[in-house]
Length: 458
Ligand code: GLC
Image 1 (cartoon, helix red, strand yellow):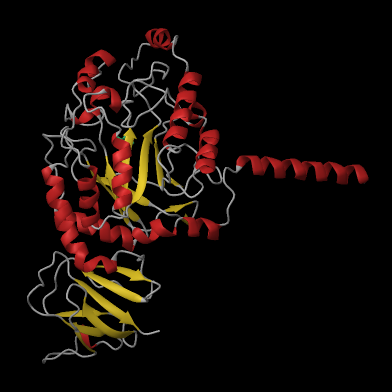
Image 2 (image 1 turned 135 degrees about the vertical axis):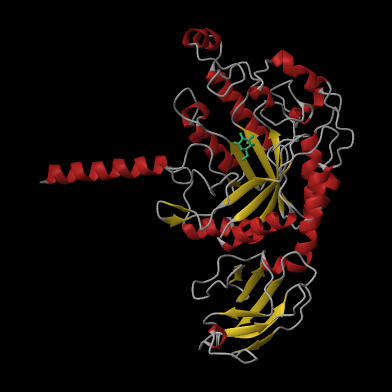
């Protein structure tokens, strides 16, 4: 009996140690919520994809798509000279649009580093511009009170030890040829380089608030957690920057502490994103047009209303929006992005109370047709976003007794409420018991999507 107890004890101890080893980051759900509080509150950030690919101006994957080798791609390095780059101007535009944090590609898949790295020559300080552009970016964001994020590509199409795989510019279906190409390449060396550079960017630039590591494609001649040694990499990240928020592309979805938020890409979730039946923090990343990097001849640009709906809907489903800008080779935002940022900023200036600190509305508040609801739990206010401006009355089904006061958010003007509709006619839906009727002006207010603020009774 004693023996059995001892074995059971040892097994439990072993499992306990195993579980501890498996966890990268031990914190309670409440601690995690606290660590992520600023991000959950702020809701809206800017993504910036910028690198050598701004010169060809036809997608950040151009090297892969056009199967260019290093030599063919070299001209973009030789001529990289964004003379109009002004990080302060970028930060101001992000801020004016209502964005609270920014994530910049300090290295994308092409392998080029926008920062001054001691581990490579393939970096910005060796191009004609000759400056550490990441340093300027970090300083400018801080000066404007914005949170600082780095995107760092796990993939590297320039490093000589990064093995050719199914998405590499030099990819081939010929197994023999592939083997020959990879003979001299040593992923262990690349792994070291990757870890060194991540340490470098998390050491040399002060506090970094977000790290976006991109991305894993395990199996079938792809790459995943073993190739990156994701567990050790993330442990180092947590150790260097304990407060940092990390995305979910390290192929560590099943590991405790392996990610902070999930990242639906170019996809607008229609409800709160769940993983294993649990609601999780999420952020959709989206482009203005069909490319992340500057793409001169791409014309599928979303309009302001679509973009605002994207933002509002994300918040109404408990998520964030990271909206991407691809600056030009001269170092300025695409004029089409500038126009949209301005327009969004104009809306945010008057309506940001319906975004910051907001989330999904409690279920008891039914969604009136053609509207989106957001809700601030601390102020106990409900926001009705009028996506299609109604004519006359807006009926709030079952809201009777719940509202203390109603006003337009953009100008703070009162909206009269009633439990009955004026006029004649048969018993109609407006007169249904429990409904509230809001009396709206016929003319739509001069704001892209008018918002009604309801101050709720306790
Ligand atoms: C994808 C693409 C990439 C882009 C990223 C943004 O992973 O590879 O070009 O940076 O998505 O989420």
